[in-house]
Image 1 (cartoon, rainbow, N blue to C red):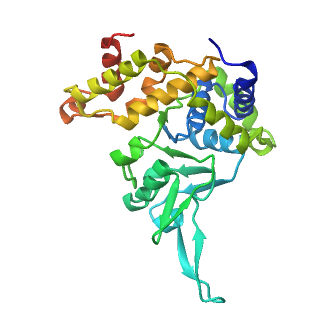
Image 2: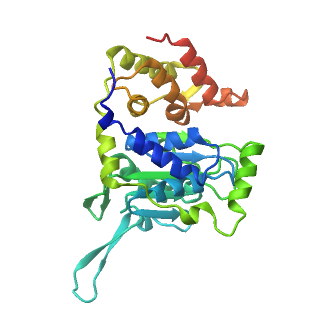
Image 3: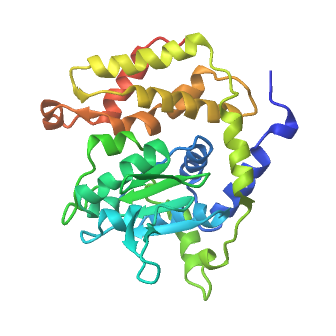
Length: 316
């Protein structure tokens, strides 16, 4: 059974992909993962070495959407009130007035998120999980659609504060871009050494209402009981694995099913198949796992452990 052609989001997704490809060369998988997170109302952590296009990828998606956008350049002196907002006395009226922070936008780019203090990092916890911000006891809903895209450099430890487990678990998926091939880098040099760069001419190709309409379709994708159990068994195996100090949370399991639903939707199906789950298991789960100190000493990485678990669990 397939989705009605009129209801398929593929033409709009294709338009977004083509628009982003004007500035990002040869990273189709990373682009698709960004769009899957957008469809699932999820947040993205882009983690890679400096200079490979993390901020460019996030900015390209933001410019492709006709939504309000704010960029937060995280540094040690950024405070929680810079992010969430604050109340102050209006000297003309004598009344308390709310001054919105950077998160009161639809698309947020949290650039180099691990360069700010843990206290400021924690100001995003409520925002990312509940889509609201509470300042001085007053809760305000954030606009829809809402998405946080964060970047960080894993090898740059000077002046950084590692993200806590609770923060990592709130990221829907983690993306690694990687270096370009020789052919791709040649294309990059051609595009970015002229008088006008592609980013300067990039414009929106869809609006907030179109994004919200696509997001509503995700919940209608059918997930069979066998597939749900398959996801639960994978999650349970991570919690029992002796090489892992921290396994997958129920939030991670829900995210994996949602990501598989988005895969099915983009494939023109209204049901999930096990291949959808296997395709999304690494981007959605790997960053949530923490290996034991003993395993780390042996050079064991979360991705390797996850591979072994997925290969061991029977496919329905």
